[in-house]
Image (cartoon, rainbow, N blue to C red; front, side, top):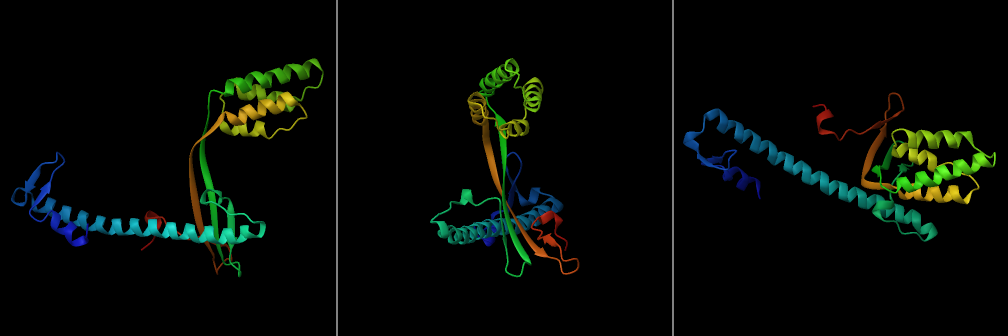
Length: 209
């Protein structure tokens, strides 16, 4: 819908919260003016939203194109999902682009199978006088208190030469589901005053005018 059509849409009437058509003569002047102002504001907001969406798509494509040039050194072609946890710095070191991914994770029902295998390992180690106190403490703390993904990932980092332990870790990893991932972009420029990087503010609320 064009801007002019948006402006003409409520030329002689407005639609209230209940979806009813209210003619202009039954609407107070203040409410009419308020609606005009909000309509004009959202025309601008729609323009900004579209521009940001198009700009993000273009920037993502530029980063992907560059990373595929980097990947060509090893015959690797990257996907957009693989372009994360990287920092690209300009030749003069005054500009940077950081790309990171934040994931929302949760534990699924397979955590019970992992618990059984981990505790079998602990019992076996105790019987053989091979107990690792750090591992035992982490396992008992994890399964005895509130289980969190952060604690689960810490346990996955423990390495022991033990097939049963390896099986337990494999199941624990399988018990961690990623339910949502979001990619973040940070654009930085070096401040000439203190020579430190400052993020370029793209948050509408925080922009000073």
